[in-house]
Length: 261
Length: 256
Image (cartoon, rainbow over the protein chains, first blue to last red):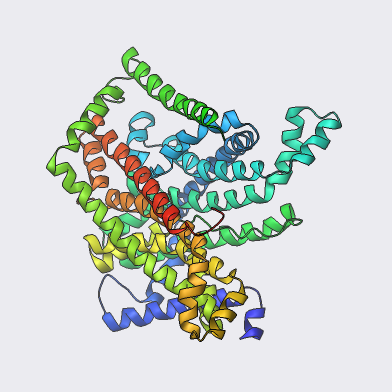
């Protein structure tokens, strides 16, 4: 189907519609209370978004996510770039990162909650941790691959080490950093939802499990659809932003480390 | 890299870990943080060693490992098959591509309540979550790897009388092995993380449950033990996988 798939955005839409149709069909065939039909769940979406309390909850979640994400970027990119340019820094941080990598960041929630309480601080910290790792890793890889000749020329023209990092290494590593940022964005959303599922005080994850506990299955599925839309919107937004920032580079086909927390 | 330089770098690498533990010990000893909030590291490691010989604890580890490997194996089979099929057939590619575009950015954890509703609180829902999370890196890596394989290889195999389907699995998949294995390693670590989270969210047994249970009873020492266990588990799996990968790729010149 070359003509249909040539229209951008159409194939994913068809796929989404197909999934919904499959869901509706499965719900009608199996007819179990745990799987309400798609149309019933979709009807709940505007109801949740229209409810001021739920909407505030969702917006508070997104705010925490953005703060944690921004903090992580401002910390992780410099660390990653320095690791890529200085062997000593890399040798210092690498083993520590290796140990932290397989630990689910959202699993730190119960301990961090003991220290910082159940408020915004602990959730933001967990998101910060979740986003930092992939961004550090990709900034490190990007900075390591910068061509030495460019750095020599910059040094010959009298640039200081700090200026070289900011004006040569950073832009040259940007395409790779963007890969890390993309993974980080997905992780931020995942960590946000997971930490709220574990802490169960407020936010999207809490709505989800409250509805589950009260057997409002349509609301459960509607919330899942909302989270899914959020994830998709973030992904599409990023795809629109990338060509503006690193349009000069070939698109990096990197395996997206989607899903880890 | 010379041996001396390498061991020097290892020494530098141990430094921050030692620093973190020393800092942890210092804060716990100084009394700034009460032991209820931050137990001294010695107590945590002693407890970890004690638990390593405890059959009840090992049972929970076993449950976690079973779910991890069950989920990972399913994801491996599904991901590799679909990845190869997408390279082999235009029709399947046009089916899978938009599906991946829609499903990959979706936070799979959000689907977990639905899986609990449909499959129940037991193993099935947790394993499904592991599959949903681990399948995408494996699928994407296989797909990218196999579509980058030199077509000449397939032509020679076809000229030697190999059927197209057989060539796909014996030639294309083998040539793409480095990329496939990278995807598998990412999938394995993700499985490790996801299984723990699923056990924390609806806890009945497993390492994640131990953490939540300890948290409810304010047994801080016991909260650190599952966390350190999952880190050790992840590192061990990663190292084991790297060894396996080196052995499988011994014929390949360059290691990725």
